[in-house]
Length: 286
Image (cartoon, rainbow, N blue to C red):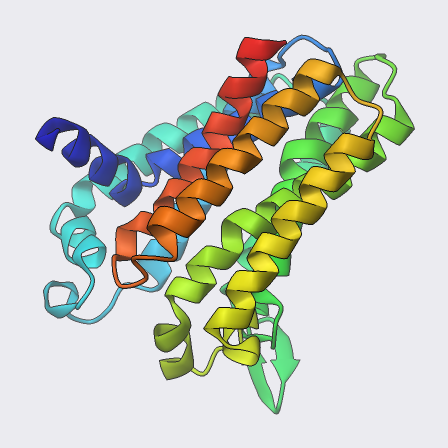
């Protein structure tokens, strides 16, 4: 049990968990379209996500990390060499994989990367100040969900189209909506957890604007809406079953673990595991 806990924290602290989630979500797109996995695209998803999250951590490095109240911050910058090591490895993988995709896909990827950087880097003028998208009222989770949807749905679909494969437009549209909603469900609990921290930094997130209890109800409402759309969508039965099983598991985890232990910082990262679990469950059923 202690070993599993150490592995759990290691995956979180090194951003390998979120990189694995990005790979899993792009792989899920190929299951939806009943297409073969495109490994260069999946490698790009993982490596680019790793680099972006590492960049975000370095950008937000406090002056004295060892005095931070957050265990993750203290651990990460005590082992900063590991952050740089996996960034270098990620960059090598990204460059290699980028050489094996179409030019238009690469340009699309650059656009997604620019939007991702805009999350933290101040490029938007608001109330007389230059801010990142995360500082715009209510924008934070929608920006994250959009970036992930563009990268895990649109990029694989574009590459499939450029490879000469037929991409069902109606299926693509349903998948886009489903993925966006699902990512909102998996992102909102983090903002609920961080409601006090975000208030301190004057970030107007959805939970700050609605209150924690209403935000929790919104999370359940989004999960129910997602499940209804899955039931009404003309997609493979096994895929439907896999997604609904995942939603049920998420509902249980939210109610019994995440929202019952709001003060336990790392419990919310179980939602990142849900991104991987969704793919694995669907993969086993297809």
